[in-house]
Image (cartoon, rainbow, N blue to C red):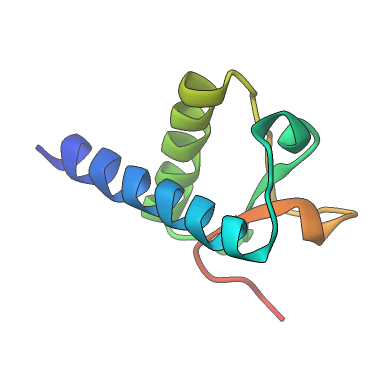
Length: 86
């Protein structure tokens, strides 16, 4: 039951992200091969779980494995899960 809820939420977030991205200019999944999923080092267990679930769903849907990171050299190519320190 909880897994279905997480999957539903992640699916909605994925499509919301795509709609937002489309309004900002098209992002093609193939162009996201060098993107990362950013989770802060102080993330809650549910945020870490959500990042892993998102990575699994993204790979299943698009065929690209996005790494989960806590630091990045290029934050413009990150998908943020949870709170982010400023």
